[in-house]
Length: 109
Length: 114
Image 1: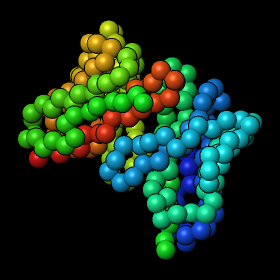
Image 2: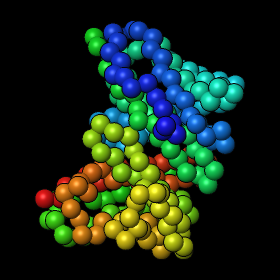
Image 3: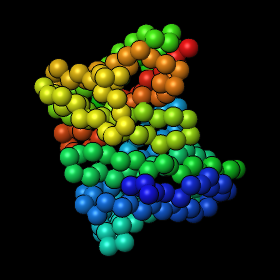
Image 4: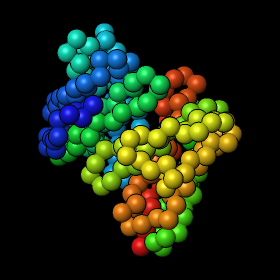
């Protein structure tokens, strides 16, 4: 079993749709959690950190459930520019960062 | 903000030769850098953790004699792919922890071995 698992995707949604991505992690000692966005042939860029209380940044909402070892990302009112691969990222002890395989999102006009 | 400069951005080399990739933190000191490899349509896979002034820590299955990592200063880490083969063709990317405990990535190096 992979340490970080994500919905495989791809998700194909129309503009304006709401889409949710899920991610589970297996190491209960994991300490911090992030969502990164990666465009084709580019480096990943931090989208947002994920906190136990849940956090929101504009159209993006992230949630963490430590008991279930589950992370989610919700995107509201999807834009064409949201098309990318979304990576669930977990930081375990020693600052090692483990990436999920990524979920590809295609937003269509 | 914290920036990591990585170069070259792409390189084509002949089989059997060695290639060096550099990652430099421009406006902060990076005591730890991470090296990743990403094959097409796959996620980033951590190869090794590079520690300034000490030996790198390699992930299971990564050959330390093939992927040489040097972190001689607080702002520079290098990855050398020795005796490269076509199967080493991949996207290599480094990252560093920033002073505010986030992570920033280099722009990546696309290696093609012919």
